[in-house]
Image 1 (tube, one colour):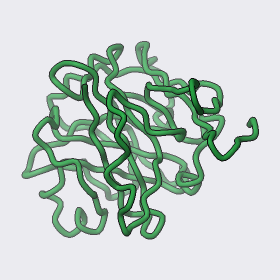
Image 2: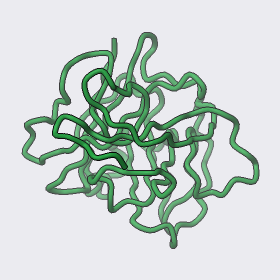
Image 3: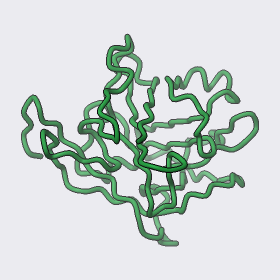
Image 4: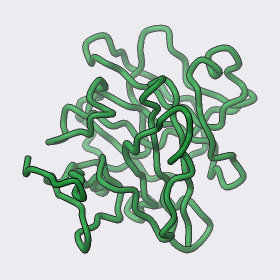
Length: 216
């Protein structure tokens, strides 16, 4: 990986597109699908309604991951419907475990691939087109070199110039990755315009995540 100055941050683009092969390994990264879980884990729901599978990121496939994700081998992300009315706030695994009907988002992280089992999706009504994920080469972001698409690490970039709301939060969140609207997968965070969601992870308590929605 190229060395980075204080103003540079490495990132890895997440490229979405192309039909998933029918014989793919269930551990591979995918958009619009989540295929694995720990034995005994159930599909996440909110008020009895199954969440949509947004993506499964096998981070061992990426050429680099940010330090805040270094302990994670696979990450699964679920969302509520088209989430336009949902609250982009802190998500705490402990809260979800004690009150599983109260979360419109679900992030599951796994430190090992070895114990993961097949996860069967219930009917959930997602309109996201199941698509392949490929990871690009490591790029240093600084100045005029910015990646505005889905990516691991780097700087949080979007249609607005504001910083993430969690910048001064006591949980000391670090920007981890961002998911853009993905036309190849028929997925848009908003009803129109440009939109992206930033994901931060707490350094103080890694079970806590923060989301920030940016739109034009």
